Image (cartoon, rainbow, N blue to C red; front, side, top):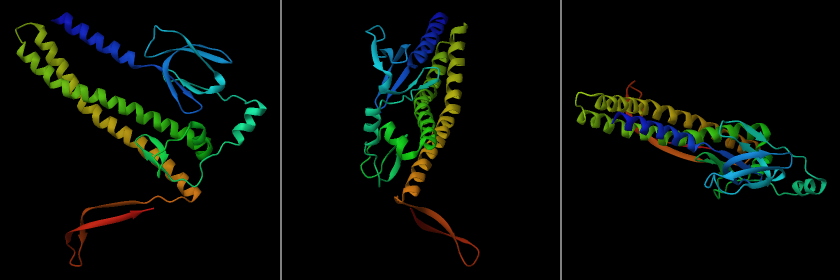
Length: 248
């Protein structure tokens, strides 16, 4: 049983590592998950994450906006376009007069819920705000994935503990399971609120970036909220009531 627990722990560790992969973001907003094997001044070579032993694909650097590697490092390709391509980029229609809002971890059109390409967001937000948005978006996505693991540890902790209790026979097998169950349960209890707080901070940054764009460009957003509250009275006491607020 001890060897099986050890092998299970090792397999879980390998599974967590296997999730890591390189992400290639194209200038049209598409993303490719895979493993970059070679980078040259004109193109990159990669294998798809879904088929790591399959063929090697190539993609021109001129089509790529950024490569985010599994270790967190990034390569941003700021290619100087050819004159003809530069003229084509100048004539691209950038959305105007739209109201932005946050939908989960991304900035979208409030009216149509349409997502924007990376190039559109750069032009609309400006590079400083865009870079802040990318960092907040990455943080939101990573903590969302982390929540899945945190809940897994939380819900599996107690069953592991009680399984250890059932298998307790004077050996270390049951003890090891009980210790692992306690560690998983306590770890899940700690990580779940941490992940929610981290994701909430990232969501707040994304919302502020969207609201900053709306304020700068004169577009209006309205949010109606209501709830139960305690209101002060003339006698110095409080009384229950209902509150309604409008935010533009």
